[in-house]
Length: 360
Image 1 (cartoon, rainbow, N blue to C red):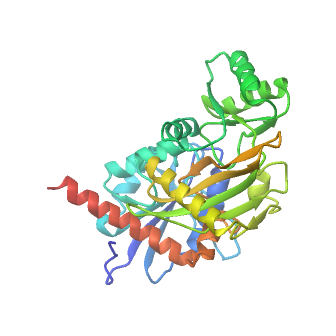
Image 2: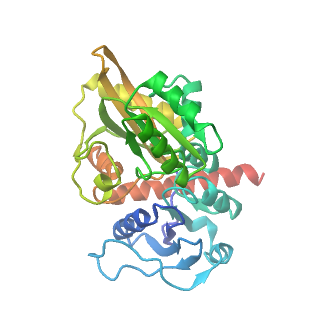
Image 3: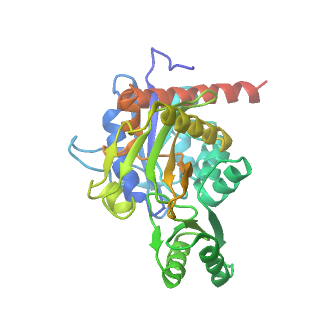
């Protein structure tokens, strides 16, 4: 694995904010990552993206007690910012941009064109994982077990799709935007009218939406880290304080219980870890991702459950103090600062490998 020059600090650009509905979550995440980066190893620059897409050199937190960064400063163009970043061989961009226009391959493509190393999945892996409909279709083609689903487009016949979902899946149903995270726009619908209303809400966030079977099961998550040879953390379990693990439960009330490690048998732990690694590779993820599962032990009618069903994959998982991704690695023996070190090293290693291939 490539290592930074020991005589020169690696320059890390923390990129946060963004145009999506997850802007505030990104700001909170960035503040905590900045606190954990080792000043002896890294020269850190913070760049914020406003809700309108302007790039700025952001203000650093005035004290360790601040809960999030604010996107304030003099606006400039993204290409101007990138040109000023310096020696690309000792530069890593750390995108902490949740949701569209950041987690979906758009920023990753810009960084590829600028020949800059960056943390996390590449263009294809980011785009595929961000679009839950496409990700589920690829997983289905590869035989990955998951809940039943339908993909809806804004221009589709919604009445026909909803009736099909009711007939094939029954109630309740979950409806969500295809390209969004942090449970934004997700609704649990218990009637035909609620499904139609939830679909309308989801399509306010994205042109595509998902209608999914509701699973009665435990929520299990696995963190994955690596490029060509990724490894999986111990699994964790989420016990929501609400009816499901929604935005408020994730970021505002800290009411959900995070069981780390999850109370699973050794066989179950191995099984879900191997599934997470398989999904990570199938969807072309790199650097990091959190893979989320339902563990269905029994069906609603009392029949035997289907076991682990993949819900989704997140290529830029949260890094807040109550986020599962860093907690899982801490339980697996990797501290928060060590995790950041490894992610930066993985980014540099991938950039070196690509440079060697394209400059022959």
